[in-house]
Image (cartoon, rainbow, N blue to C red):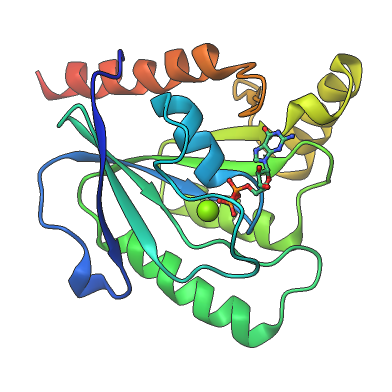
Length: 201
Ligand SMILES: Nc1nc2c(ncn2[C@@H]2O[C@H](COP(=O)(O)OP(=O)(O)O)[C@@H](O)[C@H]2O)c(=O)[nH]1
Ligand SMILES: [Mg+2]
């Protein structure tokens, strides 16, 4: 997809805030600080449309962005790394599970993991939800500029194994910093959009 325009739509706290719209949704999920907002900016070729970095910990808002008036990018709340308190996980789980189950137009979930870390228990839990709900998904390894190319290859293999991904699924290495992997990731996203169109006709 060639991004012609993109804009912020709204921030939602509860499901009744979610916009009523027929646009397809691509959701970005992963732990806090993994690079969700930065990846959205990189895919949209914008510097600071999705606000990145500033706030630590869990962002409870679900942020909507409009792409070409065709798609909604949905920036989901992040969860903690390593140690996640049970109450944090429960609250986050409620928000995400609710979102994943009520959105009729959700057709693709981007699951982001930091290329430098083995996926956490929360990452695996999310992967399991996505699989159980039979949602389309793409696993993205972020911040690939931080380590060498051979390390990136090894890390992607480990991520694939830890998340128990099927053989025909690939982990997409990207860097929002250097823009490495962004065109390839768009190609993969587009392949889902095309498939969807074919199914409808
Ligand atoms: N070096 C590098 N830093 C990144 C990359 N993506 C995000 N970051 C940094 O990681 C931090 C968290 O990014 P952000 O997009 O806010 O993560 P979010 O909490 O998942 O939305 C920020 O300081 C970003 O500048 C990347 O590809 N390379
Ligand atoms: Mg963010």
